[in-house]
Amino acid sequence: MPKELTGKAIALAINKVCKQLVAEHNLKPKMLLIQVGEDPASSYYVQSILNTAPKLGCEAELLTLDVNCGQDKLLRIIAEANQNPDIHGIMIQKPLPGSIDDSAVNLSVDPNKDLDALHPVNLGRILMENEVFLPCTPAAVYYSLKYYGIDPKGKHTVVLGRSNVVGKPLANILLWKRPFANATVTVCHSRTKDLAAICRSADILISAIGKPHFVSADMVAEDSVLIDVGINEIQKPDGSSAYVGDIDYESCAKKAGAISPVPGGIGRITTSVLYLNLVKANLIARNINKYVDEYIDVIFSENYKKL
Image 1 (cartoon, rainbow, N blue to C red):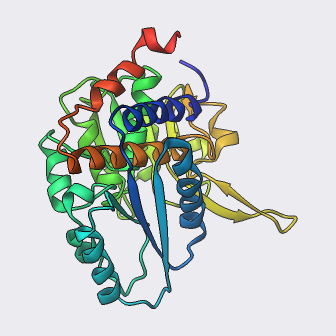
Image 2 (image 1 turned 120 degrees about the vertical axis):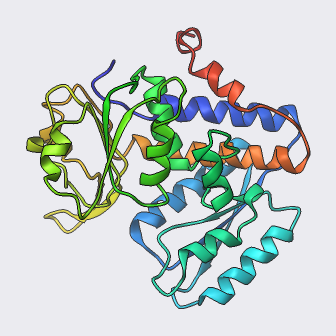
């Protein structure tokens, strides 16, 4: 197992699957990407999405709304996209302004176009291990574990964060009765007592709380696996900005058995998973019964990785 769990090879492998399926079935996958306001971390991810689309034979249409656009306007736009046969997937970039009800927005997206799997139907499918789409960031973590041969079976896996976007679905994925799951999961949050002690007890620590360098070296165990989902903008002493994770990479890397970097780790895989979901959505719209995960199983096989 390498010390640094980079995302490049995984993202490229998933991209290859997407391009192969698009060519094989003459697909024209189109995504409507909606961003409300200009959160810096969100904009970073949005730009990555837009840059990736043409490389995979896909189309991503960005609709940027004012932070004060209002919930009713957003719901009308989603309803129109649900009915538009040329749009195969809808992605609502989070976080949304406080004036907009996340639950109402998630519920409004057609489950078959729900690229980040936030509709209650898709979340329920994950819980029942009968998923159509996987939420992009939790899937990126799962695929990273799988690619690097880090089996969480029976291991104490601590997830920092309980959001509907990452923490909750990721915890359920790690509990699956499947290879590279079967973990013993603890979910921590802002009300957790003795947080540092719980983190130190983790064989695998996954941080998704959105606080720069929150996890310090004294919070991690020797030889543990550290996976950083956070992407946070900070100001450097010279006035320029940089993106860092939730985990203090420099100090924690000295103790960890393996650690994912930011940038270049989970975030890079997340964008590729989004397009994998878009291709799935296009296949569903065409009534093509294609088990896409068979392709994923192939690219994560040891023989494939040796090619």
